[in-house]
Image 1: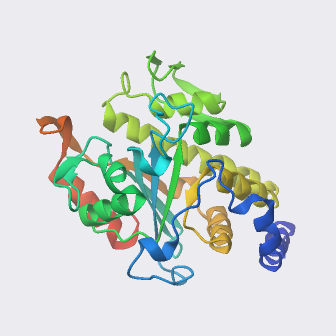
Image 2 (image 1 turned 90 degrees about the vertical axis):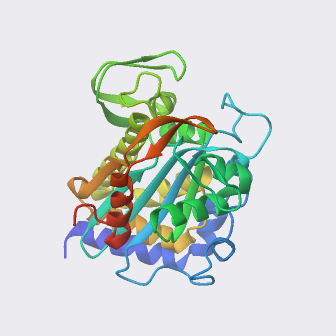
Length: 312
């Protein structure tokens, strides 16, 4: 047995045997001081279950709020759960095939929101918190989510800093005064503030809202690449990474399931992670300038809902 494999096994045993102690280290303490919505309150189909069955494709809804953070230009004293979800991504992990998909949904997508008519999709969380955002995207995509993750401007910035920055390939020159994204194209190591700027930029991002959503997915890819590289050298860093995530992300992923997902990330090659954004076109709607999703967008939803792997 390799030394690396031994370390992973020892790490797993240590965390399983000391889950309560780990919780006291900050495992469930969010920077915002808010308690994430329990799984049983959000997911009807498997309420009360601990985790998806082994081998099942795992679906996670990742949301980024424009509120609930003092560093946000939209902060008005509200909570991040009551903000608009300006970053929306379906994360699908197929543990059997060792592949994953990131499907971005533009925040301005004009869609039905249960009980509220048609609006831009980012309004779903504003109307009814993560629960309504999940219901909206489940109805839209046909995906049934196992978990959700929610963060905001400040926490994304702070996570970037606590992870030691993030190496990202900037796809083209950026010079946006609104997001403060001022980058030359190429591989760059960004600090937390720059990661936030890159993620927020839409004014000179190619494709506007669609391009921004793609770049946000690229941040997730870069984080997986960097974490995987470091964890393969030192698996004990997994505890540190999970503590950082638990401080800055509201989630209903159980503690030990977070560990399982973290170990699963070790197995997935970066080349097996696909990042896409559903397609659409700009149109004026009752909500103003919006994006109307194309038939191909719904094909992408069906594709990822099938087994979590795009193009399979």
